[in-house]
Image (tube, rainbow, N blue to C red; front, side):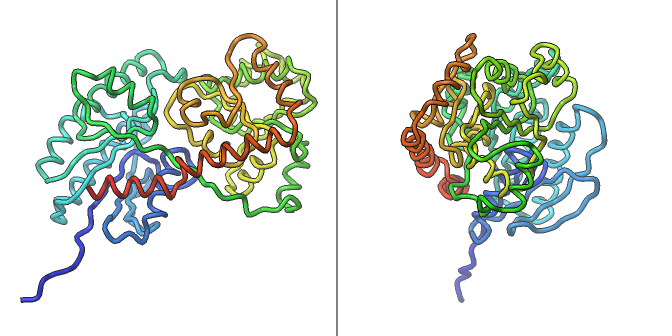
Length: 391
């Protein structure tokens, strides 16, 4: 009798991203993971998408399935994860799949975690969780919501088979905070591109964007990120206004009018023509080129693990000025300059950065690019995930 030599792939069901692509960190992660693994015969991905209608389709050789979510306010995210997990279990049962992992991104569904872990174990699979950053610390949430996130995180840590932390600091926090549950953890970082943008400096689209926003190549500092208080826009704008730099400060973000008005009341930044809110940029090549052409990049995130926008900045911009917190030091090491929230600290660092020689800036750029290539390239990160899923 002839032996069956067909490969039985490990099925990996990913729940928690809104889709694959432009939305944010998890969405980019799933997009890149499946892109780099699209020719991998040993792993078959199944990815939940948040959408208005149910549909199944393929992207990057992954089976994608839409999850319809009613408009129920902040509870949407919880509903989405629970519904997606139910659909995964249904599909696994109907197709007799027993060699599988369900990988949940973020800790939103703690109260349901024990139920799903038991169900997955009965079906012959394992549940992995990426705990994200400290969601319960984010200023955008009300106190009751923060309390829920913290409790949810605890229950997910308790019932997960493995916690995949994208930051050494997050892994340390999980191990120390939930010591009594003896959590099983591993560290695999988030990834970044190490290539340069396909656009040239004289690209029409790029020059038109610069003209519209009133910016010049190498004559602006840049920040890209969500417009939320814990990313320290207030400190960055206030300190920039204090500095004597002749350069502009370009802020690429999704503007929140309420927070914007609060900042204007406190800082009166509109009087400073150097401060420029330039909207969002979803064209990846254009955004990459804008990063490459910045004189320097500010990063003020202080909540969360390995931040995607920091990795992208280190991969593209030579001069990076980062808030001095554990997460940022862990990623950039000696390839960046650091600032604190103390009065005048960032303002004086900006003035110091303005006086750096081209040689000094190039040296920092070489270090930051090397840091990304060595520890954070998507190729390297996807290889680590392949090893993890095939264990």
